[in-house]
Length: 375
Image (tube, rainbow, N blue to C red; front, side, top):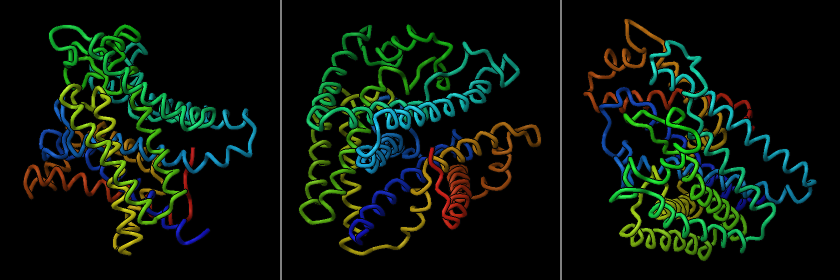
């Protein structure tokens, strides 16, 4: 493997690691009511740095697919499909099972983690990762690149009128009248939807999964481009310009179809893909052109075991919420008795950073032992 190829792998791993790192921080504050604005999701329309985290994770899922495409060529179709569906089912089931404790906390009337199936959330973050990975992988296995691009453009173009014409009321894109909510309610019922915001609505709903597929596909194309064009000035400039074009289109599209993470609007897809391409180009520039490697290994630890560390953070954060200590969740006790003394908001952020560093230490142990968990 050449040095240039190594650097391209490192750039993608660093980007993946930055995404996982920020994802853990925004998911585990000491107090969800004491969070700095950039670390909160937009109330509805708009895009904060936190809203960039999940689409960036899907983007790096696409990056990962780009590395296995060539290996598929030497395997039988049945073998490739087995690998894709196996990974999909495992990630989906893990995501679904993790929803049980959260559903129980939001529906205390059942007094148990073993709540009825009718009250469990079907879709979620891991479930969306599983489904978009599956469909994007099948597209790259069976279709030609030009056909994939055509399908993605069609998805983004069609999704806009679907949201407008199948929503209801004077504002078909509102939280209570949008097409994503209507379809989820029709297919699964309100009991299966996320209700943390006070009403049933799933930000990882079935309909909004389709434009999310485009995010994964874009990540795969970006990964393939980086591998084929290397870290030349021309390749880097084209990657950055492609990101800027997507960002520019999203800016103007926002006036007709608002950038909205919870609906995963087409403008949101282009907005986040554009930023991800430009950020990735900047990382490659810093690593390969400026040779600025300070702090790189910190993010590589996250980037080499992304799914495992994310699952570890999910399970760890859940345990901190359900383990009682002095008549309150242990996470809140720690925040109130250790972290709040630097200020309510800074203490909440410091709690999240400490938790993220603990997850990093677990990743460090795995990396030192050359253990890389793959599903």
